[in-house]
Image 1 (tube, rainbow, N blue to C red):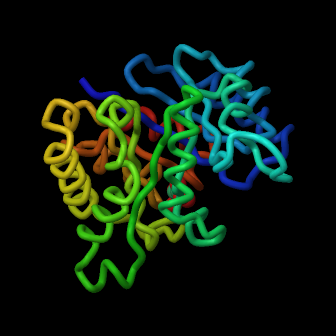
Image 2 (image 1 turned 180 degrees about the vertical axis):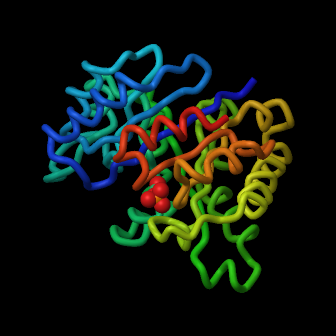
Length: 249
Ligand code: PGA
């Protein structure tokens, strides 16, 4: 059985003190044994948050890592550094990183390799912009993103990934994809995985939906057979809402 996952993506929000307070609140109210809960915090929060959460229920993720292993790259944080905090996951390929920081497939392939080498589980994001969706080309666009990156991995490495489909037009806009649109894309992704790596691996891969997923719409989204959970931005900053999403399966 593939894992159900609810991952928060705090983005560039919360000071260290605010982040620690939020993590404590989440830790005190989230009580689940069958959902893997993940907190995607800013780099500087990782060590503190790892220490304070119940690691049987809650894991911690970085939101990025460097494309180089170490060295003269001022301001970068390497996969090995992330791993050394006790974080277990790293979000890679988020559309904000692709769009604002020019992350190409080539760069993402280096990050994916380093994350995997260092024993981190990548949460690999994909998703199309509004013009692509309006042209009806979203499936081929997303599959192409996968072919340029994670579909180059060996089956052994691919099995370690989590995938998050996040249509750019739904991120932070309050405009969620309908549960049918999300299900249709996740089914397409799973079929592409099956064609590339076989049905057994496709059936074991957790694929999340992200983009204005919140305490009100999570239940309908998570009821779909191919939606294994969510990557949650805005709503992950409110512990009560985040917990409601965790309880929405
Ligand atoms: P959102 O962000 O839930 O605020 O739309 C999701 C994401 O970008 O991961």
